Figure 1 (cartoon, rainbow over the protein chains, first blue to last red):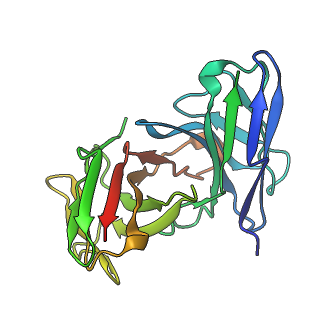
Figure 2: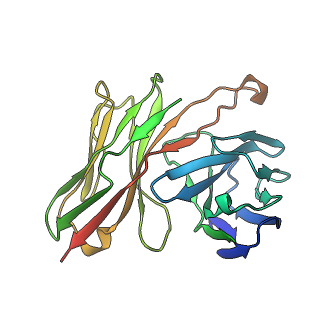
Figure 3: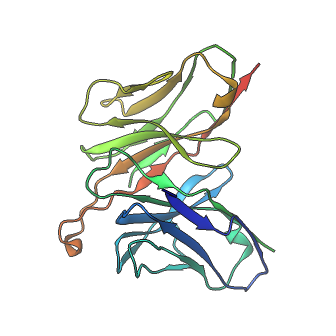
Length: 114
Length: 123
């Protein structure tokens, strides 16, 4: 059972480039989320999904797009990378029935935009 | 909107001693969960302990326990017999239930995090 898998683990982009951060989970979780972590800021919610075909914005959605075509996958797209998007990105998932187990997190992607 | 405040950016403790990390939160919700997550240098987010708001009894997990004061909106983490492996960032997190009629009754639970406390255990 792999849990939540994020790829890549590290990435360097030039300003203006686009890329997709991949996230996949094999626990049949309906709820999936993307967070970014910046020094001194904790983790902030970018986008989330409550099931295939359903997504919504979080606290800091600007500059990011998401889609959810399957239960397993929830990619995060940067259309035109900016230095302000330099951060560590975490994908997380949980089952919707109960919240007591919290979210399971991937190992993160460290993104640097130069 | 919910807010979570961790007022101690950094703390240190001697090995084998006890340390308490503070967390306060602000919400108008009555049904929610509170969590402590640990992030070691490996960057992995690890769930340490959880508390359900409707339970008065404080949660415990081995050396980790919480002091949950619902009226004061306080949720502190106590680590007993601190070990070198406890060195990490610790995040307090709140999770509410948000209702969206368009989702046919499916609520969305999203985590709101504090800014974290960096704990160093000193040999």
